[in-house]
Image (cartoon, rainbow, N blue to C red):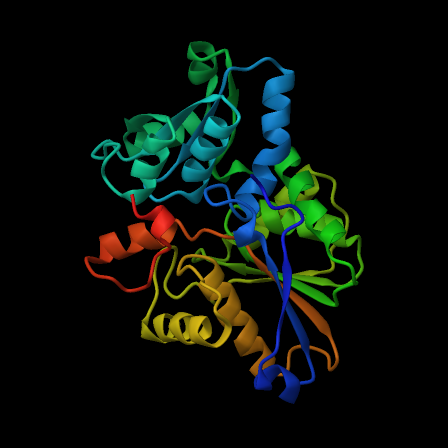
Length: 308
C-alpha cells in the first residue's frame, strides 16, 4: 500500500543553524517499497489512463539499471496489469542484475534489443503499438504530461510555502512538475545527474511542450561527478557521512548528487538567510544493489528488499 502523503522530515544539523536555514526532506522514498519516490508520482495518472482506456498492460523503455523499469513492473503487478519492458542491451537477460531480477519477479516480460534498435523504437514506437494494441505506452523514464501532473501534487502535501525546493533531474519530469506546482512562489532547483549542457535545452522544451510558464528555477549541470552512474570518493564519503548523521539513505545516481549539491550551495552562501528549504528524496534506492554489483564490491548498504 502506498503512503500518501509522504512524510516530511525536518533536518536539524549544526551547519543549517550556522547558515540560518530551515531544512526539510520530503520523504517520497517512503511512499511504497518498490514504487517509491517520483516513480509513484509519474505512474499514478498513467495507470489510471491505462485502465480508463481498457488496456491490459503497460509497455515502456529503459536501461539495465532503470528505476523506471523496476517501478513500472511493480506498479503493474499491484494493479493486475501486464508489463513489457524494451531493454537497451541485447547482451542482457532477466537475471543480469538486481534491477532486472526485480522487474522479472514482478512479472515484466522483457525484450532485449541493441542500442541502435532501442533508439529507433523510442523515436518511432508504431511497430510496438501495432504489436501490442492492448498495452499502454509509457516513454523512457515515464515523463509525459500525466507524470508532470502527478509530480506537481507534491506541493499540495507541504503545509508551508517553501522558499526553495530541490530535486535530482534525469528526464526532467519531476522538476517540471515542481515548477508547475510552485506556481511562481519560491524557487525550484534541479540537479542534473547527466553530463552535458544539453539538459537546459531539453528542459526548456519540456516546459514549453506542457505550457508551463513559470520560469522561477535554476538547473545545475556541474554536479554529475563525471556523468550518469559516475562518482568519486568525495561523493561516496558524503553519502556515507550523511546517512550516519541523518539516518537517511541516499542513492549514488540521483539523490546523493542532489544532496551534495545542496550542501555545497549552502557553504557558498547561495540561499537567502532564514529560508525554508525542501529537499525532495525521489527514491531510487533499488539501484544501490545493482550499483554495488556493477562495481564488484559493496560500496553502499542496500535495503534488503531490493537485493534480488
